[in-house]
Image (cartoon, rainbow, N blue to C red; front, top):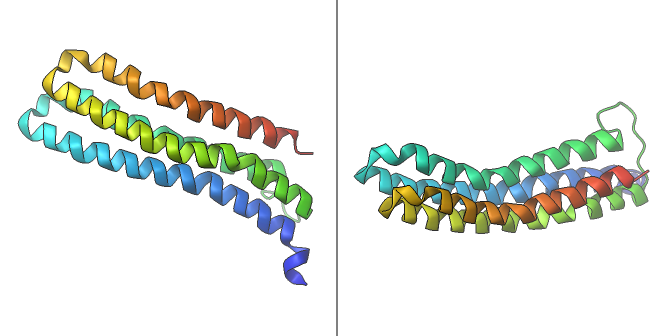
Length: 159
């Protein structure tokens, strides 16, 4: 019975957790892989560090978007205030609202990491082409931003 009484709270906390976890995992995975590849390039030419660091940092933004969404869910639901009562319907609505950033954020980070890895290979051979590598990696970011927008607008509509 206690479970059912707290179902709204449980669903809302699950929503926040998914919003932060999945994009965070994707970002950590991608930033790590790009960092490994960049470290290999730096063994040959340490002067490329600045150009490679930007490519490594790019897939980390989805984790930031997920954390922002987590914060918004907890803020909007009243969980930062004491004694917030959340119905199961509202909790389920928050869970549905975070799905865009949770799912798209994860995959966007992973694929942006792959594009950034290719960009590291490009910069390794042709450092003057860094801007092209950045633009290609940033294109993947578009979908994470759209997913963030979808989640945020939905969260604000939950009354």
